[in-house]
Length: 409
Image (cartoon, rainbow, N blue to C red; front, side, top):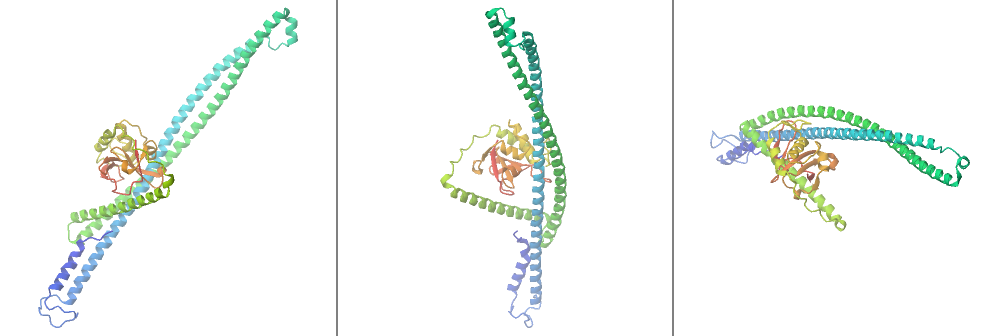
């Protein structure tokens, strides 16, 4: 964190005074000064010490402000992870419940088919018994009226036997299918129950983490207020000026950190690309712009200033993926309320391919570890629901950490 220049004024003033003292000597204890009203060397030294102490205090306060920002960042990421884990668990529970409904419907259809095949098989059994298929060939010859009658009866028996076999096989297949469908429905119901339990656990964890983040945010904001007031006193400026200056310092530090991270990531990617140059595939063409992008952006802009709330998807409070979900719903595209699935259901692109309406993601690792998403608004700007204590905002794409993934709905 860079130290402020506001605290150097006193030191500069003292040095100017030293330079302008007539007859000042290198000897720290000169004889009677030429001007009895001029500050003594001891006074100058004391002033320099005070200026140095003030500057040290300014640096210490700025470091504490940086530490507070880092603590808030950690709490923010932890809460974002928990919120998106809950969103993912809710999405999984809804998916599992839908699968259960489909499996139940399939089981009912299989049971109906079994009943129909059972009726057909019962009729075939009755017909077979009526034709006397249980008679032996000898009995058939004795009872038959000559060879022609025997052949006619045999042909009829064979037809009935074939129909009987067909109905029997259909009944067995339907019975097997009905059993499997019933088992699948039972398993789907159990999976849906497990997913619901997981979602409830994730909800409770997200609630606790969000409450912790709210407490951390309140504590850190109070600490920042106290530190900025002390900074203002040390720098001899108003609190408003000190706050504005500190905000500029924080923004500059964040921009430098983001630029460094971006450069490091690009260097790593370039190195990897160079190493794989021989087998590197041709880069994918830039996908066509998503229809409805302007409508999605317009919807997101209309929510500016509305509060962040974990798990919310409107109408007047939002979390990150909830805002993206409803923004793109306004653009005619259905996306889940879950940032990982939003990436999975979109077309991955590079940062250079970004166009208004595209999605920007932050992750702890691969796409499965995504914990924050924003809507790209163009000109290097994003619209997003940042965190507890901060409303829906328009910011630079590099206002925070360097984004990890990009996709087009």
